[in-house]
Length: 356
Image 1 (cartoon, rainbow, N blue to C red):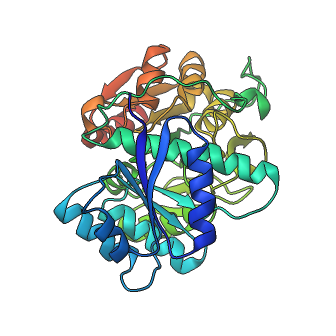
Image 2: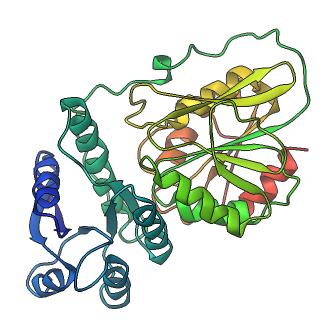
């Protein structure tokens, strides 16, 4: 199979070179062109056709949002937004997702070896996920050996066992998503009433962008949406979005559910990890949990969903037809941890029925 052909569009020469080095290190990816702004990019696209475009949003001559709209109107190509973590950059990146961008990555910067290695892993995975979204995810990628250890939720907390904590009937909803998840979550959360049981969400997204994402959802939904902070209580009518670059775990003290937000290694190549959230839900909420796994590449969440299922939780997966990338739900289904597989537009109703 031919390599995934990528074009990088960014006004910073340092960012262009850093991204090129990171992407070219993956044997499945080839950077075929770079451009300093969208007008140069459009000119180059007269002679080359990338499979994926990695683009900044704040650039001279033509901004990234206008560039994205032009691409989507004329020749749709999966676009990954590479943005700064400033407030304006974060807000524009979220707008770009609404306009059709597939994923967001944070601009890489020269730093520690660990930072660059984690950036390389996450950026390459995002580009592959964007490629898979082309034509509704039905573009197979050959298996490739992991270049970094792929840790499990064992790195953050032990497997759930028999618990003797105080009984409670309060339901908790936990949700995991990745590629395509920003719009899937919007549709799901917009359909929920204001007295919905408390929800904790892991959406794979870089640091600081989750705050802008939560603010945007809060303006659209009847439930309250905020970025999770350590010790936030999980209550009816509130949705907590795991902050980028921090693991978020469900915990319990007596009858009170709350979240713990903490540092830790990449789990299933992600931080936050769906598996970490789901395992904590299996451990501390068990049969009182309703778990949902949505569109996304890879297998993060699959093991955790099986653990929730085994603990008596009700588990739901988004179906293939409504997924941008049918990776995470498919892996959970294959492990036998899913009770119900349904389309995105039916998930809210199923969650509410299951949470009664």
